[in-house]
Image 1 (cartoon, helix red, strand yellow):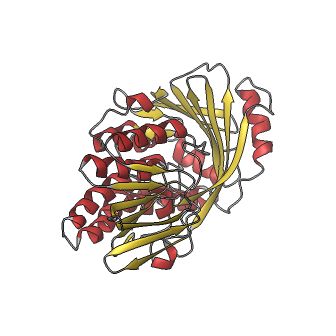
Image 2 (cartoon, rainbow, N blue to C red):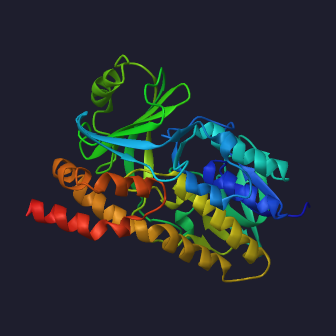
Length: 375
């Protein structure tokens, strides 16, 4: 029988590929089990803070499609407010298939094994080794990283992550078109009931999204696109469309077990207010690799420290983000007037997007202001 891998990573998306890249560069034996072809297209706006570069020992620029320097907010495509993003390269746009492939290339170049079309149907601990089972056979490893996205079912039987995940409904549109303002990301908070829509420029067009954050289904995304796309100078039926759900942050949960951690969307780390998912995916993948390394070297508390680190570095901000979202998206018109249109608000949101600020820095004032207006 062959020796078990040090780590089996279930899922080759941003979180899983980042984790594999870090682990293999540390000399760990890693297998990545991807349920389908790789890379594959994913419904994702592709926005991420440039500050994620600090978590990686290699340059991420080959995966970057566009640099964003300004954000513009509107209500029903009118009443605009804008803000400049801080720093030289504060916010990046990527194509998810390209980012995932780039990170996986770093992992395989360092020795990771990628197995495509290898869905994991079940896993169980046998002594000191995990056994992962699927139609293609079985794989054994000392540790497992669950990184198979919003639809993951592997963590729940192990008591990991949210027992009842909360979802946001989205429609993503990839549009090939001429871009008038290639350095500006657009957000509109009036077109979508209980949510917002966005248009992120990329090299040859836009990544457009419609998201609803109270209730699972996006609110009439086609009706939203009938207004948004012409505002971008495009036909209302333009673009390639994909419906999906985002598993968003909804409380602190244990993200580790005996030789197992859960990362990225499978850990419900997506921002519940602005739907940012790539930054928490890369953060959790990087932190998981760091703490797994210590665990593999004999530190029995290292994985508990991973859960604590995610809570401190991401979850505490998201707890405030959820509270803002619960108030804002129930009365979005008031939220736009009292939140977005205040003199300092656009710059604060820009700082959150760029990773320079957390929701806790603004939450109490914003929530108090919104609740007083509702009352």
